[in-house]
Each structure stands twice: as C-alpha cells, then as structure tokens.
Amino acid sequence: MEDALSLLLSLGAAAFFGGLIGLERELHREWAGLRTHMLVALGSALFVLIGVEMMGPTQADLSRIIQGIAAGIGFIGAGTILKLPDHLAVKGLTTAASIWLVAAVGAACGARLYLLAGVSAVMSVTILHAVRKLEIHLPSGSRHDSLGTMGEPERHSGPTELTSHDTKTEPANEDEKA
Image (tube, rainbow, N blue to C red):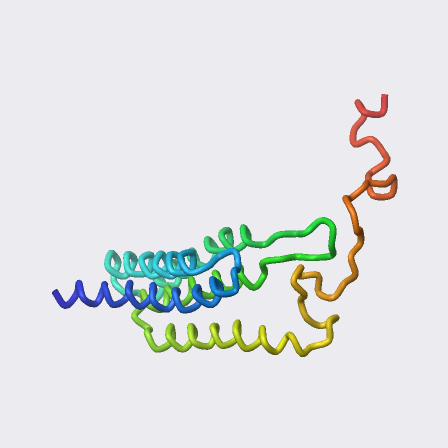
C-alpha cells in the first residue's frame, strides 16, 4: 500500500507541477497549454518510475531514461516552433522551452525529487510571467513582439512574390538542362 501511495504521489506531483506551468501558458493563449504540459510531465514521471520499478534506482539506468526523455521531448517541442515566411521570425521557442522544462520537472517527480521539481516549476512560472511583464518596458529591438520578429522590420507587406533572386536559377540536374 505504501508503494502504491508513493507512485501516486510521484504521478500526482508531476501532473500538478506540469499544470502550474501549463496554466500560465494557457492563460496567455499559447499553443501548448494546461493539458499538454500536464501530460508531458506525467509521461516523463511515468517513464522514470517504470525504469526505477523494473531495474531498481541505479544511476546509470536512470541517466539513460532521462537522456531518452530529453531527446524525445525535443520532437514535441520542435512541433511548436513555427518559422513565419513573411517575416524574419520564429515563433514558439518559449513554448518549446516550457515543454522541455516540464519534462524535466516530471522526471524529477518520478525520481522523487519533489523539492527540486517544485522549485523549478515555481521558478519557471515566475520567469514566464515576470519576464513577459518586463519585456514590455524593453526597447523594441531587444524583445519579441507579438509576431516574434525580434524587432526586425517586415520584409513583405503583402503576399510573398518570388523574384529571380529569390529562387535558384540554374537547373538542379542534367535532365533539366536539356
């Protein structure tokens, strides 16, 4: 019974701390919100718990599990990053970073490092919220605007039109030259 409570505490803490970070993202209408962050944290905790329960808490095994989580979560994070073609812009980097961080928080819960997970979650929410407020007061060239253009001027005001200097003018292979 005590073991089951310990597992529930790890999973519950992961979902709770992931939810704290996800709530901040949800309230600001970011692409990945409450559910995504909770599920990523829960999944990371579950992977760690499975490894610990199956193999025992050896450092080498735990390290490999955490490496797999860190690498694998990059695919989800990469899916939140968008290159805007009409602007010198990349959008979604903060959301990707928050997903990566929440995976680490979930892994910490799975390893039963609750203080580390809780402090990290509170720090991340503080950073996401406070720095957003601080960025309002920074010069436009040093902060991200709503399009994520980092203060760069727009390249095109209308639909994108390709010109001869925008495209490759030489044929790509011998068949196209003929």
